[in-house]
Image (cartoon, rainbow, N blue to C red; front, side, top):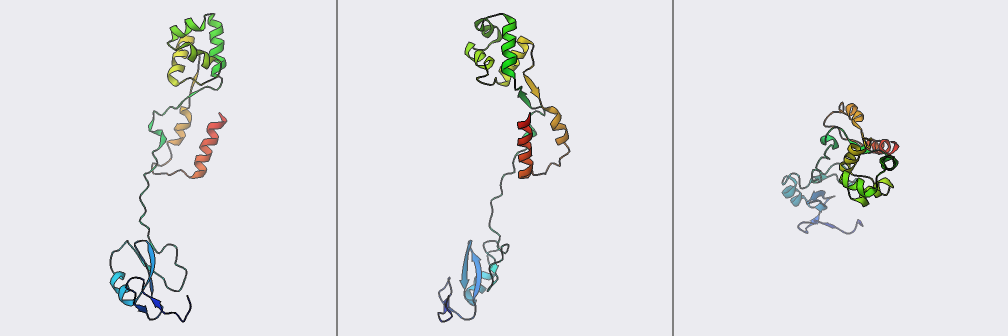
Length: 179
């Protein structure tokens, strides 16, 4: 702004004598005259706060009405034991099928899975669901489900109101991948 041009109040439009006042009104920064400054300076706490004049506005002088973010639900509300399908499930199922010397059709009926599901799992085309894995485990007496209950015992010591940092989340992801 040039020095020659008088400044005008952005609320009432009156020319401003002196430096004027910067205030934040409804989230917008406005330059106001003394009269409007008095009028809006003492009112509506929260909708604006006085801006320091002549400097870059200090970052924390205004409080933006931020919507409180819903706190992320801790994942451990599920049963404390996490169940995961073992990595070599296909091999284990396939060998069990070979040992049984029965056809896929017979086995599928006896286990209670469709033949396509059984074949897809045995050949590693897809991972069985926990429910399917339990049926296969019971039938073949093999282990397909790993329970990761050990990790959760040490997690118990973390205070309840603890918010994980991005680094923690990255570590958790890396740990899971290493299995």
